[in-house]
Image (cartoon, rainbow, N blue to C red; front, top):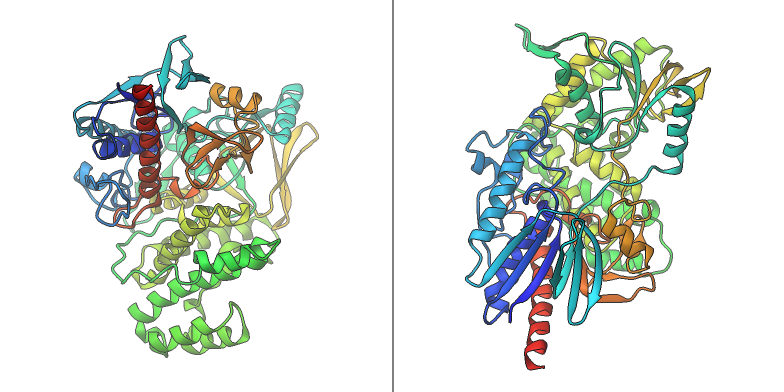
Length: 589
């Protein structure tokens, strides 16, 4: 008899799982005879978020050379390595290019087709272009019900839908209700490509709350997407030529500045030997000793790790800017606690120039303690800030910044695998390591010079005043009013507010539970936990929307032993073993 596995979700996460299932099938199924059912209303590979029907104006936020969905020699897993091209190699272009999302859809579709084509004889992949709406236990297996009434029976089911739509938060619902009653416009959180932007008026002030990746996408669609053009002046300066259809965007956020841009140069130095301080052993001592606080107990280890990576590159790659050898600095640095007097003295004596020292507090909140007398002062400061960020991120003289990001990636991976997550740190990680391509910030600067974008400052507050939305920041006196408020942010993950019919059905019956908005699973094997904490023998969940799965979010970087591949391979082998065992038991019976 044939074993069978259902994968719900055909985006990058589901595609990676299908590839690992097919790669491991011959090893774990003696026959092999396996049916893999892939369930998603969107075509496999890209799924919903990376679907083909998006504007070419929307880019990926990772350089093409840093994106792969194929395992390579660095991946430490039990299953076979099946190498393939990175996105840059598949496109055959500039490795530093930021591909469009439709182009990424083509790559992901290729990965899926390749996984199916390379499956061993006896492994059959069936694609069901419908939404899964329910899941039930049946004798010997699971029954998945599709929205068109069809059913799929499988020995095991993996939920890999990723973050889906959610109902509004209480605050968002109140704001939407207020807008409806007063005739104002309110655009809630969401993916830019899914939002109806026709209601955002041209030529009028619009308040936009948020300055991360969602804001960048909206900025592009509301400017270039409405006929505006960017041109390069004779002196190299980028200038925006308005179409007249743009809104006048007044933007602010908690930090008051956009995410840091991606580095625009190849990193040629030796990779920092991280993680050095944020290890399972060190964290075990911190987390196992009773109640703990991230900022007080975990952050000092994290900050020390980031500084270690930063100074490793600075001292080794730019020795003229240091007064000690790396060996001498490393010994003293390892012996000191983060921010101790001894560590601060060591850094000060080793790195004489203040601009060469790592200031994590200033990096995190560059507007802290700064107040301007008027809007003109803030705008001038922001123009300089953007120019400095673009200059620093394109200059290999500051390669220590890139090394620090590599340290941050290693830290994030360790914390995610241990299920340690802190909202503040998640925001810091995204701000420093997951920012937009440099050209996007250059466009933002051009839009600000053209008067299309005005910056509002940090710790932005929005309320309703005299029949209009009002936005204020302590960074600068006064504020701005408008009839349109745009939440330029992605919705936070939430099982309790999910609208996915399968998730809501399982949740309402108590067969699925959440922790901090994420789907709760048993960490050892990602089996779905019900409300009582009992793991289901044949239900699994995988991806960044799952507790302990944040390290599998985004796309894998080549040659970095990516957690996505290691975890997907381990889960594929567990599920294959479960399906095979089920079939063996059925056969014997």
